[in-house]
Length: 487
Image 1 (cartoon, rainbow, N blue to C red):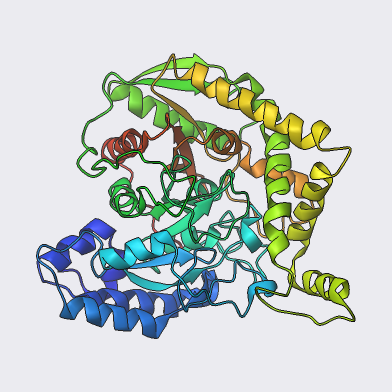
Image 2: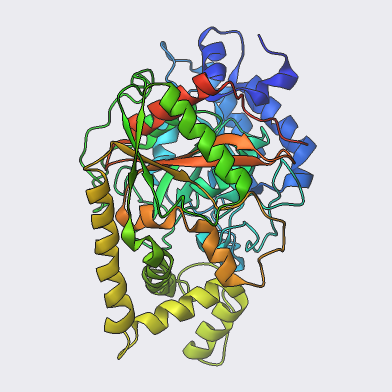
């Protein structure tokens, strides 16, 4: 049995094995994570809201009512991004506007986790309303990268990635609209999976861009991602976009290997402009897969150059519509005014941060009379072309391999005053979201300064199992263990 001080460092599957063998309790695991939070949270600031007493009560209940056999997540402490609704617990989306909001219902994924017996430690920090690439836009202050506290953890699910990397939880859930699971996972040296659009219900996820948002796991390895995805995936009759595709046994499929697979290398993603250390790490991942029996082929995604512009029209237009509900009447904090319009203006001026206001204004303009066809309509047409690019590429290969981010984690404050440069942080993840495809980010190296570097695997719709099996194979063959944070 691991020492109490080591329990927080365990993976989900390691902790689950100890629980199943009755050599550790859920209470011990939970207290180990809470002790780790007490030790490092002041430096990392990964959590928006801790639910300490709720977690302890859940852990005691799990210990007292052990089913036989134990479900895979029974008694295991995890965290949820602060835009995933949890009944009676804070769900503030990193915004002043929702500072007092407590949902009266659980999201689909929160219900699934409760049914599976997980323990919820709290809600993780995030860029406000999931709008950001650095986790610096939160009204609660920035999250720090546990591998270098002067650097960002990525965004918008930076809190979930940082908490997992810092061993403050065994795993976490994030949400991904244009890269918000994958880029933070890359920056923090953990595994982050964006499922196929519709694979996981969005019911109870506070909407940013409804045609793009997906909930997914952020974990310490591929096996944990398979365990967590198996619990949260599946059809939800209350979500009209939820797919009816059957959920495979992701864990059982982890050992299929990669021999004979065709890996596509998009020339637009690897043709220059990459940080040299990122390029070297991605090259190592490619070489490892070739050594394991996969073959590589160059493919083209010709509309990649339009992906960022397309995304920032589609996503902001949908955000403009979705965030219209936050008016001080039905949800969140209200700032009274002389009349209804003044109330709206005062509430939104005080409640929304600068980046959210920027995106609402961009989206409103793109949807306005006289500009709709030229901007939003054209963006939707280009989105179809981007999706068609992927369809054509998959005629020549089984999966695609790309960098996750063009640079290592950058310094806090480095890009805050340059929104366009910040937006380009997601250049390798955005097109995947526009196409609705599954993708996983996984660590494949480190810089000379010991900052994590990662690659991205992209699959056909509902091919999450193959992606996780490939990451699992890389973990076994690369000889690279999970990089311990420099805390």
